[in-house]
Image (cartoon, rainbow, N blue to C red; front, side):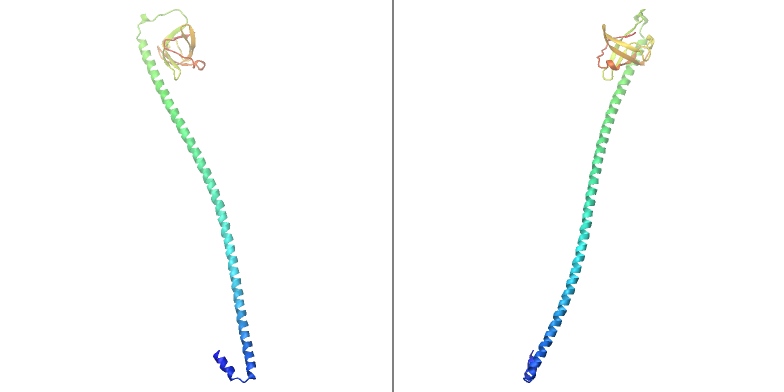
Length: 220
């Protein structure tokens, strides 16, 4: 500015206005050019920024879409996992019940086998004892009925042990009538046979009936 002021001071009054006008025009041209350049740079920057922003929005939309798909897939997997857990729980409960039922059945079977073994042993013991009974203690009658008595009762499995056997003409499958005095109690079928004893199963229609030792048995 000092250089311009010195130049202006050296100019003649006639030239000075023209020089000032030229300087002002040059200044305006430079200013306008700079303004234009700045506007273009601003425009380019704005276009670049808008492009970047648009790309960012697109990327954001893509990420949000993938996120939504991920959430949906996660919920689907959680639902399937919940269903699988439910099925596993049901299967485990069923298995526990089956195991419990099997154990109960095995326990009952063991008890039944034990009772059966005991009954068979008692039947064999009684049969052996009966074989040594003296003949004079056996009363033979001409009564066509086969008479005996109940020696033992298994109330749980509805079996009775009687003192009649193969030697008395009893056969497997024979049905014996049971009496208490003159009162009819029920019927039982011969299931196991020894020489002087037999194990009989109480027939279904008389399972609710109570049988006792010393009850009389007859085969028609």
